[in-house]
Length: 148
Picture 1: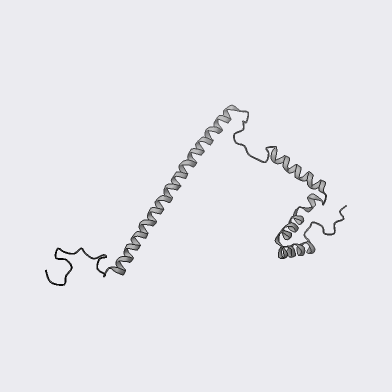
Picture 2: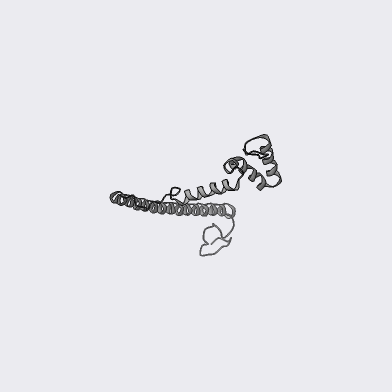
């Protein structure tokens, strides 16, 4: 029997408290949301909360919560096959990573070439009529207005 004034369930009171908590100080709203979602599991008791924590900790450390691909299956042929496949996949991953790197380098070179071309076009358009940029080289007679 729970004697809590505010029960950990979705009710207008708990929703209002959560919203007010977020408005006043966001960790209060977050705490209220946690209480609404997981309050029944803890039951408001420190013993229940500790047992829930211990159960989760045991699950994580038992190996059920994690995948260890290097562990033996008990079948030597399967383990050998698995190691070969993992090696092949790792080689494929390295090859694909190198292709990605090469592609990024290629795209960077194309961007630089395009930028250089656009800049040269801009300079020709803007300064093409000015002496010294984009103009033909002077003849042996130099730059003079007198006929050579």
